[in-house]
Image (cartoon, rainbow, N blue to C red):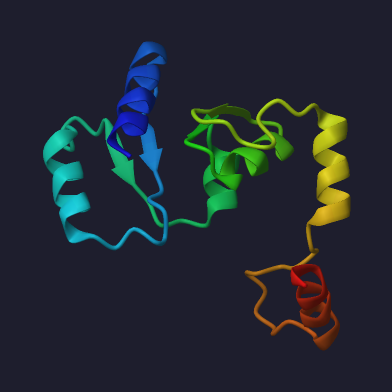
Length: 130
Protein backbone atom coordinates (compact mmCIF):
# COMPACT_ATOMS: atom_id res chain seq x y z
CA UNK A 1 0.00 0.00 0.00
CA UNK A 2 1.69 3.15 -1.25
CA UNK A 3 -0.13 5.40 1.25
CA UNK A 4 1.29 3.42 4.16
CA UNK A 5 4.80 3.63 2.71
CA UNK A 6 4.37 7.38 2.13
CA UNK A 7 3.30 7.75 5.77
CA UNK A 8 6.28 5.73 7.00
CA UNK A 9 8.76 7.71 4.91
CA UNK A 10 7.38 11.03 6.16
CA UNK A 11 7.56 9.83 9.77
CA UNK A 12 11.11 8.58 9.25
CA UNK A 13 12.20 11.88 7.68
CA UNK A 14 10.87 13.77 10.70
CA UNK A 15 13.23 11.90 13.04
CA UNK A 16 16.13 11.29 10.66
CA UNK A 17 15.47 7.58 10.33
CA UNK A 18 15.22 5.23 7.36
CA UNK A 19 12.38 2.95 6.31
CA UNK A 20 12.98 -0.74 5.88
CA UNK A 21 9.94 -2.39 4.35
CA UNK A 22 9.10 -6.05 4.30
CA UNK A 23 6.53 -6.58 1.60
CA UNK A 24 3.76 -9.05 2.40
CA UNK A 25 4.70 -12.56 1.22
CA UNK A 26 1.48 -12.78 -0.81
CA UNK A 27 2.54 -9.76 -2.91
CA UNK A 28 3.71 -11.24 -6.17
CA UNK A 29 2.67 -8.60 -8.70
CA UNK A 30 5.72 -7.45 -10.66
CA UNK A 31 3.96 -4.17 -11.45
CA UNK A 32 3.76 -3.38 -7.72
CA UNK A 33 7.53 -3.54 -7.38
CA UNK A 34 8.06 -1.51 -10.54
CA UNK A 35 5.74 1.21 -9.22
CA UNK A 36 7.40 1.04 -5.81
CA UNK A 37 10.80 1.59 -7.42
CA UNK A 38 9.52 4.48 -9.53
CA UNK A 39 7.59 6.18 -6.72
CA UNK A 40 10.16 6.17 -3.95
CA UNK A 41 13.71 7.45 -3.99
CA UNK A 42 15.88 4.37 -3.99
CA UNK A 43 18.95 6.52 -4.65
CA UNK A 44 18.46 8.46 -1.41
CA UNK A 45 17.87 5.18 0.42
CA UNK A 46 14.58 6.48 1.79
CA UNK A 47 13.14 3.02 1.33
CA UNK A 48 14.98 -0.25 1.62
CA UNK A 49 13.33 -3.62 1.06
CA UNK A 50 14.17 -6.72 3.06
CA UNK A 51 13.20 -10.35 3.19
CA UNK A 52 14.76 -10.84 6.63
CA UNK A 53 12.86 -12.79 9.31
CA UNK A 54 10.15 -10.48 10.65
CA UNK A 55 11.17 -10.85 14.30
CA UNK A 56 14.72 -9.75 13.46
CA UNK A 57 13.36 -6.70 11.63
CA UNK A 58 11.19 -5.78 14.60
CA UNK A 59 14.03 -6.17 17.09
CA UNK A 60 16.28 -3.92 14.97
CA UNK A 61 13.62 -1.21 14.61
CA UNK A 62 12.72 1.84 16.64
CA UNK A 63 9.11 1.74 15.49
CA UNK A 64 6.92 -0.54 13.39
CA UNK A 65 4.28 0.93 11.09
CA UNK A 66 1.73 -1.47 9.69
CA UNK A 67 -1.67 -1.26 8.05
CA UNK A 68 -3.31 -3.84 10.33
CA UNK A 69 -0.99 -6.84 10.27
CA UNK A 70 -0.13 -9.11 13.17
CA UNK A 71 3.36 -7.64 12.80
CA UNK A 72 2.05 -4.72 14.86
CA UNK A 73 0.98 -7.15 17.59
CA UNK A 74 4.39 -8.82 17.50
CA UNK A 75 6.11 -5.43 17.78
CA UNK A 76 4.00 -4.50 20.80
CA UNK A 77 4.77 -7.87 22.43
CA UNK A 78 8.47 -7.12 21.92
CA UNK A 79 8.12 -3.70 23.55
CA UNK A 80 8.42 -1.68 20.34
CA UNK A 81 6.29 1.30 19.39
CA UNK A 82 3.69 0.18 16.85
CA UNK A 83 1.63 2.47 14.64
CA UNK A 84 -1.41 0.65 13.25
CA UNK A 85 -2.93 2.59 10.36
CA UNK A 86 -6.26 0.74 10.19
CA UNK A 87 -8.31 -0.78 12.98
CA UNK A 88 -6.85 -4.00 14.33
CA UNK A 89 -8.07 -6.17 17.17
CA UNK A 90 -4.93 -5.51 19.22
CA UNK A 91 -4.21 -1.84 18.46
CA UNK A 92 -5.62 -0.49 21.74
CA UNK A 93 -4.69 -3.41 23.98
CA UNK A 94 -2.62 -2.97 27.11
CA UNK A 95 0.18 -5.35 28.14
CA UNK A 96 -2.19 -7.56 30.17
CA UNK A 97 -4.60 -8.00 27.27
CA UNK A 98 -1.76 -8.83 24.89
CA UNK A 99 -0.35 -11.40 27.29
CA UNK A 100 -3.77 -12.97 27.83
CA UNK A 101 -4.32 -13.26 24.07
CA UNK A 102 -0.85 -14.71 23.53
CA UNK A 103 -1.34 -17.31 26.27
CA UNK A 104 -4.86 -18.34 25.30
CA UNK A 105 -4.92 -18.12 21.51
CA UNK A 106 -1.46 -18.49 20.08
CA UNK A 107 0.25 -21.81 19.51
CA UNK A 108 3.82 -22.22 20.75
CA UNK A 109 5.49 -23.25 17.52
CA UNK A 110 8.91 -22.27 16.22
CA UNK A 111 8.40 -21.93 12.49
CA UNK A 112 12.12 -21.28 12.03
CA UNK A 113 13.22 -24.46 13.78
CA UNK A 114 15.34 -26.85 11.77
CA UNK A 115 13.29 -29.84 12.95
CA UNK A 116 9.77 -30.71 11.81
CA UNK A 117 6.72 -30.04 13.95
CA UNK A 118 5.75 -32.87 16.26
CA UNK A 119 2.48 -34.78 15.97
CA UNK A 120 1.30 -33.06 19.16
CA UNK A 121 1.95 -29.61 17.68
CA UNK A 122 0.05 -30.51 14.50
CA UNK A 123 -2.92 -31.84 16.50
CA UNK A 124 -2.92 -28.63 18.57
CA UNK A 125 -3.04 -26.51 15.40
CA UNK A 126 -5.80 -28.65 13.90
CA UNK A 127 -7.91 -28.59 17.08
CA UNK A 128 -7.80 -24.79 17.20
CA UNK A 129 -8.81 -24.53 13.56
CA UNK A 130 -11.94 -26.66 14.07
